[in-house]
Image 1 (cartoon, rainbow, N blue to C red):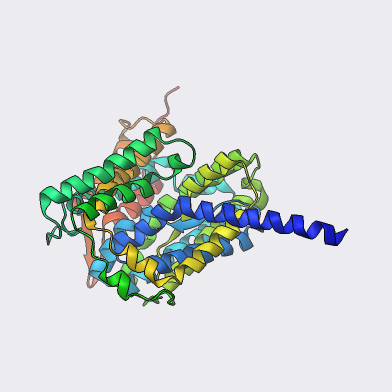
Image 2 (cartoon, rainbow, N blue to C red):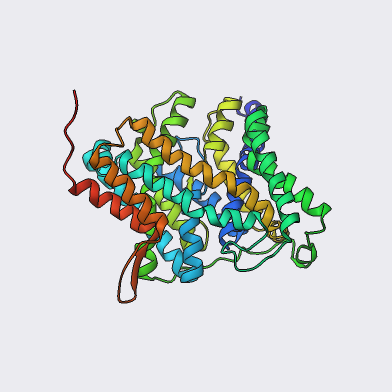
Length: 416
């Protein structure tokens, strides 16, 4: 009997491998977008996404069908950190952010989820998410206009850049609104393809580096160098994606009709997410997060076997060693990314607004108004606090300000 079953088992494993590759295809556009925007290596990002997903599966006992890859929440601090302290120092901050997840997982294990909601309620997390989107707005616009992210240099003539970036934006919007089936899950990848086609027509793409790159190459891993300033700047950013993690776990649980909050437990899923983020940062990759696009694909095909994500992770790791792939991704012109970023970063801001709306709190109530106002203005307006060589500003300052105000300010009178 065992000999009769083996061919059938093999077919099912082969089917899982194919489905896993499709899951990676769904995540691919967003996965490589983050390293391309921040100066990190896309091949390393592929490797760390795969390795992080496998680590997550070990910690969650292989029970949750999710794929972990590059987190958008960290784009702004990575860009600032790379420009200010360099990649190795920035990576130390990102690795520390992963440990914040580990700490929060321990709090949940010991005190329950409600303890975390008391420390980080929507009145704090909502504005922090808004700041992440708003602080990136100038970078998106500069790149859409054919400039570097800081606007210091022009890389593509303005008129040409506008055509390319708006085509990328238009394709992303149309696929998001009108796409059917698998296409609906690929708005970012569709935008990149449309913008890249326009760039080819305008002669903006140079394939010399692709021709020079080897087919097989070990990813260019970069290891962190500890810098306290970078750690304190980036660590508060972990607040927002840590809270979003619960929503992601609830979403995939509702799709699979299982309660992952109880089994394997949200403390385990958050621990897996945090350790995957730290692992990625220790190798030079961007922080990881659970991908809603992949959860949407799971809902579409109605196959809830976590082994599919194992195959997606293995495929990502294998692709990481294709040298020409990274070189090809590096040929994508700046306006292509800029057009997509305009929508992407605006969407992040809207997620923050929606967090406040769903909380149903009166933002004109003095306590709420003070917390939201100071988080947003401190984060976006350029406020900074410094002592010696240490400086706290941007998203880090916004996050810490929100947590402190929420803990110190007295609760307003509740209206019956």
